[in-house]
Image (tube, rainbow, N blue to C red):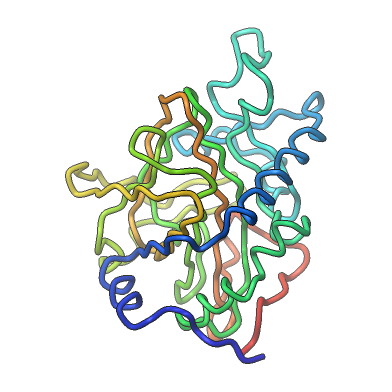
Length: 283
């Protein structure tokens, strides 16, 4: 079907030169309330007595398990590393202990699917040149007060690789994101240097094919945004977020999109779907 793009030339120029773009007021207060309320319901219904999986970007190779792999086509819940005491019990209620929920909210939950497949989302992707895009993963990220974990410098193409690379991240702030509660940070223009390393799944599990480079923190700029803003992230942009040591959370809903026109989803990605994803549109 035909989709009209919704980024103007100045926005496209900024995105192409800097590797990211902030779209203020992308979502309304009502839309934010709807997404947050639905997540509250999902958390209330979540029973973790039989499964407690931890998510960590600093130690994911050791904490990855079948629950993580199967989450590609499910709605799964991952705890913060610091959520549990020495006795294995939660230090605080589960609602304040979850790191993220993923990775198929956009497919399986009507509220999150509505946003993920909206005209404003597809129009944005069209203006970025996507021909037959799919949402390959979605995540509700909590960045809990006091224990919200660090996300180390990375590139999204490392984890969600097509040949040629086509990943773009759409990061919707559901609360104000500040330097105090763990906003995004990025190295402007770093996407121009290309992909540094890949996160590969093989018969031994998951691992990076190369060690991480060292980055100078002075090169990063903070991306502070108000609730409702959307941050568009190039797949090769180096970005990160720090621990949330504040008393306020930093909820966000994140989508990662890849194209399926003229490119190939690589078999050694961590995501191995049993059912092919439906494209958002085909132009």
